[in-house]
Structure formats: C-alpha cells, structure tokens
Image (cartoon, rainbow, N blue to C red; front, side, top):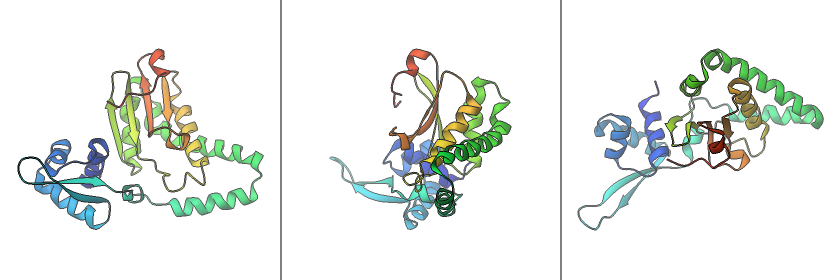
Length: 213
C-alpha cells in the first residue's frame, strides 16, 4: 500500500489543481486527514496552495504540485547514479556503452520477471503497478477506451537529460519482460507526454496517440 502522502501526490498528478474535498474523495479519506498532509507537503515545498475566487460565495483554496515531487521520491540515489555514469562514460568507449546499457537492462529485467513475468499477460499491468510502487515510484493504473495504462513519475527525472541511457535501460527491460506485440512504452526522454506502459486492445489503436481519459 502507498502512504497517504504518496496518494495525495498521485491524486494531484491525476486531477491537476484540486481542493481538499476533491483530493479526499479521490484518496478515500477524510478532509481533515488530507489537510494535515497538504500542510506538511506545503512546508516541504512539494505543493503550493492558491486562493481561487468564485463568482458566488467565498474563495476556495486550490492545491497543486510544484516540481518537488520528483525529488521527494522515497528512493533518492540520483546524485550517486549521475556520478557513476559520468565515470563509466570516461572509461568505457562509446561503442561499448550500448553493451553496458544492455547488460543493465537485463539485470533490471531479471528483477522484474520475479514480480511480473510469471503472470499471464492480462494480469501484468496490475503486477507492474505493484512492482513500481515497491520501488517507491508514484504510479497510476487506469483504463482508456483503447488501452490499459500504467503511468508513473519518471524515476530519472533529474538525470535523464545528461544520461538518457538510464531511460533506455528501463525501456529495454520492460520490452524483455512484457514482450507482447500490443504493448507500447512511452517515455518523456523520447518526447512523449509522460512515462507509461500501455496494453492496447487491438493493433489499430497501437498506431494512434494514447487518449488522455
């Protein structure tokens, strides 16, 4: 289970700017609980609270995410990862770097297979969601008219600009584990709107842009 604080972040990522009552309905807890977590997140710089005036009645307070959630993920090894990749690139020739990334991808895939690979394709979205949550990543599992989607905050948000190999290794690992012709990976480092995996219901939909239902 995710912590309530992670659920608040996930709610704001899904809903966009929202009131305490809207977040409470999404998370399924009382407004006073949400208010407590919002106050803590605001103090940490993860969210900001704006006053929105209405045509009738009193102004409402609207909560929205800052950029901070990407650096407040439970596992924060991005500085170490950046230094390691800088050193690897200094000593590994460019032609060999692709092989290194492939080996990293295989190691990630081996771990994923223990959580996902043994399950039938129709259940893998659920188990991928569980696996990513176990890594401290904020995840949303949703359905659109065209596909079943697992969307997640990029774990390499602060590093991918300088080291796109990190995202490439993850994409390769997902392909190795999921390997279905109707599965497609999306990645912000490739210019997509978000990081996600989609199980399309037919191959015609696979060629289209994913709707934002």
